[in-house]
Image 1 (cartoon, rainbow, N blue to C red):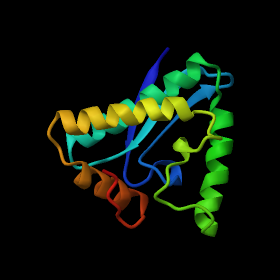
Image 2: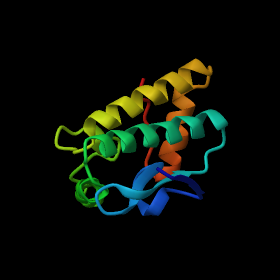
Image 3: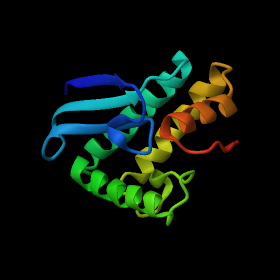
Image 4: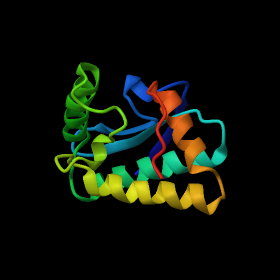
Length: 140
């Protein structure tokens, strides 16, 4: 499998997130593209890249397609815009998210990286929220 990591200014592909992933061919075939926001500290970037890699590989392993995940995320994005979903709630923790287990495992990775490198979780959270254009909250 070929993996391409792209960094972008602002939220990737216009989503309310700091990282996304997709396979460029149907049925999780082709190149895996990870797109992550440019963040000010290497620890933050490592946390997001690892999260997206873990989540995408979980989906690849269990044949959960990019199309399924994007359809769920698009519904959540619409709910964010309509005010029907709290922008601080991560869709990946929703029990209906097809990639939920991968998201949870990726979130563990984030915690390990941020705390293990002695970076501030609060500052990481604030920076991610800034990129996503949402008000800050502390998720300790």
